[in-house]
Length: 176
Image 1 (cartoon, rainbow, N blue to C red):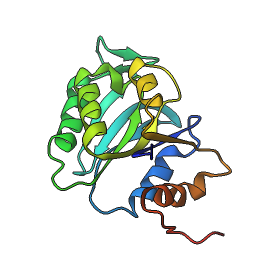
Image 2 (image 1 turned 180 degrees about the horizontal axis):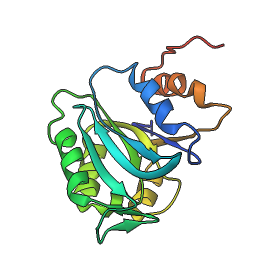
Image 3 (image 1 turned 60 degrees about the vertical axis):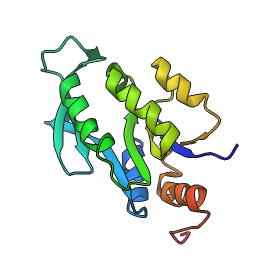
């Protein structure tokens, strides 16, 4: 079976989101969201979602009061659902959906899991996914219609070309 969905994995801070964003510059009709670290004095204190409608949502923080936690962060499920709902429920003519990232923080939302499950059947997904963790992450890793590329310091600059070649069969960046 030919891959329909393309996901990046890799260690924290290796450049997965940057590689995804560079790839998205080459695609028309893409809707989705990326995760952005919130830092204070050089330390990560939270995470924001920036969706393709350019709205920013604070959804995970060290100081948030929430029953939903993942590691050191508390998660605002309502903010998460609003941010992704704006994109997933109003995707218009989007041919591609980008997601950064499918991991434990996001999988605390049944709404997120439901929408991503539906989109796996209807659209081409391009995104970042955890290597392991939540059962939904494991389920996606087992799908035969998904392709996974590990981002490393050595290959991260080539990732946009790799993704575009897999999606369209064409290269968009000249090799250095």
